[in-house]
Length: 86
Image 1 (cartoon, rainbow, N blue to C red):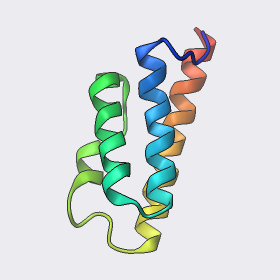
Image 2 (cartoon, one colour):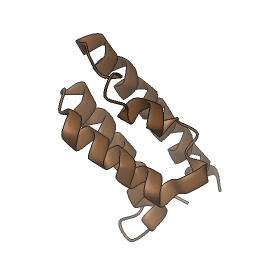
Image 3 (cartoon, one colour):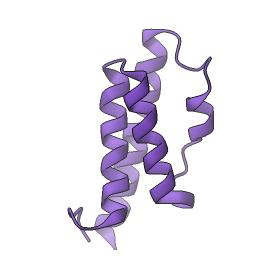
Image 4 (cartoon, rainbow, N blue to C red):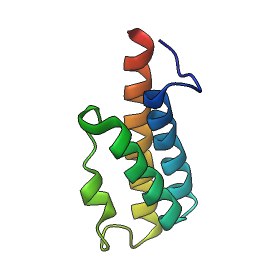
């Protein structure tokens, strides 16, 4: 199954990609909101520790933003590949 506009799971996976993008652009508020939205939709399928990212102290430097954006992007790729293989 591929990503589609009408599928809620696909929307959650796409929100991960968007969260990664906004965190890489250092837009913390938007990135976190999209990450939480994705967590709500995907639930236990999301293996990323979202609560750890959302903490106030987590995103301090540019390196932190890029690190977590990359981790979220890895999770996006994993979920997208799992969706495509089903």
